[in-house]
Length: 174
Image 1 (cartoon, one colour):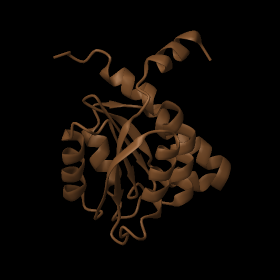
Image 2: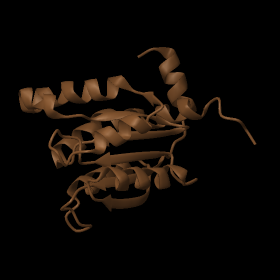
Image 3: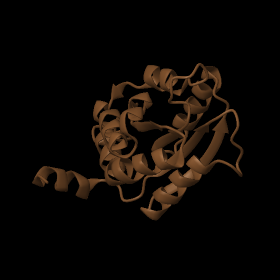
Image 4: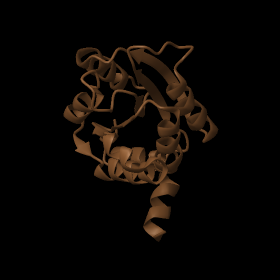
């Protein structure tokens, strides 16, 4: 790893405050296994999960929930689970893609590459996506426990603090 990556990581905040948004027509707080995985892995990495919500897979509701979560001063990043497939009810990708100001193309590319190693060609069905909205990160993962675990362990935990640092570093002080 290059020295500048180490330097940037060294300057990154130690604790990222995460909101978890589960998008599902069927999940309840008791059955939200994808959200449980995000919370468990983020906490295990020393980050703070400040809020968890479940919203139906309807574009207007997803957008409203994301706007509300991103407006919170105690949220640095929003991780969504669910609604990233291609069925008629899957609308997360469309909502998040329209909201993102700077897309992290590598997130989806690497997620699908890692998924391919586990599930083969079915990985092409995933529309995992991430990017910035203002100075905050939004990362959307599929809803299955395995997919969430893969995305959080391999992509978010190693880089979330670095990403948040990069998003904030030229922010106005005031």
